[in-house]
Image (cartoon, rainbow, N blue to C red; front, side, top):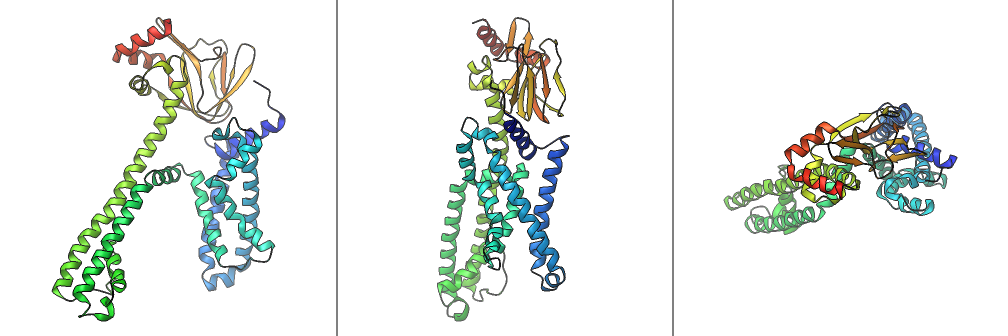
Length: 387
């Protein structure tokens, strides 16, 4: 493995600060909390600035916050472009190609739109009202610091066809309800239901269960149509809510499952197992969180477990070299009776976390429980180990 240049070393460290800050890493914690606080202050300032009395009283303060925020967000945008080659999804690409691919990603586009008011103000277009919407886009920058928001966005993307179908059904029911109400109410209330477009306002408000009360039927037939429409409105709301809730839960489970599966499949011995057997191994993994600088394996210590890196970075010392492993890799050695499982590289003599890391551990106790509970799997692992 080629030695990293000083620039690559700094770039890797900054990447860990910005994209993997957690645990006891003080610099990463300060960066993340400061950016979240600044984004929250920006959104609050935009809301308060719309109040004339507050705008007149605190106008200079709002302006100072805006200028400082634009400077910070511009610097953050530049830094994220610089560290793009360190992202796992761009690993293996040239630095230029990785940065170009990052610039086309949704988070990068949101970051760019968030700093456009700065460019607009520099060329004399700072008073355009549409820039207010661009400033509000900073709220979505919080998604980068919230795994829950990222999972929700992925869930919405995965179920976009079903949600579009729900919208189409809603429009169809609205048209039918508006047409029916127009037919039975247009003579009694020509000013409110005289046309189908007029009735569509009542239909959409009723279907969404808002019911402002500004438009309502007065005839018996109109009330019957309204009753049916109100019941259908409950169905119209339940459909997308159920779809999004189910997709959100599945996305969280799928993300953890896929990441864990890919790590286990990297082990040469486990990689030959089928889907059901790998799933059985996954059930016996134990989560472990380690701080930066924590010693995971000591020098000269016999192999006692396999460690899978879910997030963070670990430096392993081999016989003649050192290597840094990040998320998706594994290290260690596991010995149990006549079964030996080791990393694909020489067994590390020591391992130290160089960043706050989350590990999945398979130790001899859990491995023994796995082989006891699944004797066929144990025999297959023994066969593969001997072969």
